[in-house]
Length: 298
Image (cartoon, helix red, strand yellow):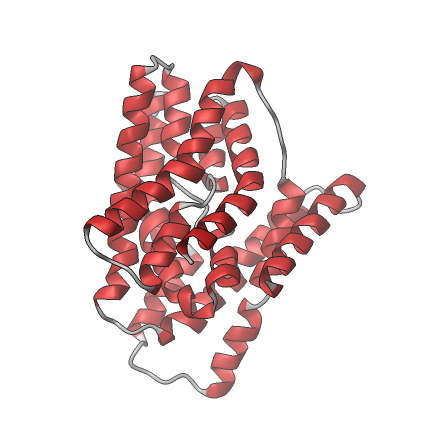
């Protein structure tokens, strides 16, 4: 509950600062860079060494891709049945399968499931959603916008991402025992992740209800926050999988639209207003729905 209070308070601080307009224009972008280049790599290096390499460590990665694939298929079929435009379909195919499992998912997982769940959450995010954003996401955005993309661009985007580099480094040194002072330093630096990222989210938060897109927005929110975690729960039940890793998978599946997925849609000029609405409203509602899914797990 204390961690959840920090999330809500820091989000509120960001919203207030946005209203006051005292901060420079690029403040949120600067905070995001701090998270990407400092806090997230420190979190990875602090938590991954605690991971026990067994079949449970693979579950978040495997099921992240399974859940995204199933959700993308359901979204595409729905869009075809409802005869939605190419632009609407493209935005939904980006924002529904690609959840905010990093910037928002990691703080919420820590708040709701505790620090022992963090290694699983990191694996789900980095080897699952992050890779999907930079492969499936870019290819999809290019396809629906009529553009093109190269393999070298995809590869460069993935291998130059600081948290992903930290993840590879953490696995490469998994057999080493870090000095106590170094582990403590990583933990202290990573503890800045939650307040900084939530203030940044508050600074960037926008709510725009586009009446012409009411049906796609409503369906997108239902699929993101309700259907996707339900599908995750059913798939895990079919394979008779439970425990801490399974709980992380369900909550990560319940996350709102990834902000980067919305930005990607906008950068390819795929109905920017629809993308912004889905990101904003799903973020707001998820603070309640993710907590609700956590209670259902209990």
